[in-house]
Length: 513
Image 1 (cartoon, rainbow, N blue to C red):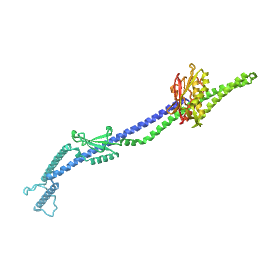
Image 2: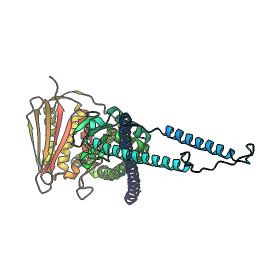
Image 3: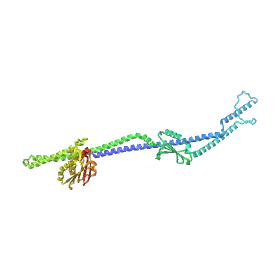
Image 4: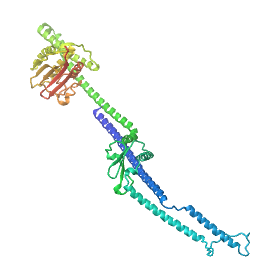
């Protein structure tokens, strides 16, 4: 798959996932906003009803007190007595009218009589029904006006008393809590709440709990007894400690889908990273194959040419020439064997743990031997190598063969990446610090750019120098060094500047003795 196709796929998938996540987040935010608005509306509706109930209760209380007081001080007009008197008057007037009609001549008592007619009889001093009804209406009207005036007086008295009476005497704390709880439950708010009552002097006269109401946007305020005068208004403040949990629980059914989408996005990102790593590893393998072909081709060609020359009878008759050609074959065979050995080092990276044969090794002696053997190669390139073995405690537990290869690979890299215009200078040193043995190998070569320092220990990675084959190798040397040092429970770090040089520092644990 081409890199452009991979990038196009990445862009499309990233945009898709980001859009999906944005839509889900926006939907959750809208749901939370709607839940908050519904919550606020339910709370304010409940608080308003509580305030209204308190006013009704107070008015009822004052009316009951006033009625009882009035009944004790004034005569109460009995409407039932008034009705009985009215009925007696009607009956008496009816009997008198009937008796007068029967005393007239020609009137048969057994004859069916029509309903008596009401009229005024001045001689008997009897009041007419019409007059009695009018009087009754006047009495009722007067009573109504009296009661209305009495009620107005009671209302004015309530308004006056409520404004001057202390708030603590107007409210029962237990009743207020029960009212709040009942109204909240009626509006679907069955959760913990705290409240406080504040009088018109901004003093807290009651607080349900020692809870700090810090965020004003989460505190709900309602005026108690709104019909009081503006100077005597009192406040009720309510706070819900678990409001956020309540709102979150109402939309938590959306959280799993959001989490699954996010996990899917992470999985996609990880897959893309793996694809790029595999692609880069494939490119490195191709470079490795090209380098390996080039490295093997040269010694094989030399050995083949030398073998053909040995078939010449003239060469066989010349011992000097024969010895020279035999030496060339031997050297190229060793070179080829060395390259094969480096290829075989690849098997180390497919194992979880390299099988090492540890024994006590004196690193000062080991490094001195390697430097002596490598000195000829350095001098061949017109360079010099210095060795300062200052470590007092230089014995470590190590695999002698692999730790020797580590030092050799670092020295070999220094030669490969030297600057043609500058004589090669190598410096190898050892010292002790913090109970460890430190080994440094420093050169004055081409150096390594900062962006490449983190990659140099990856297998098949080679710093580009412009020409693929101007520096021989497979990109396995430093990866092998890093793995062997790690398997020795040590550490390795690198310091480098372009066109100045590179310094590798290895730290190993010294033996207890």
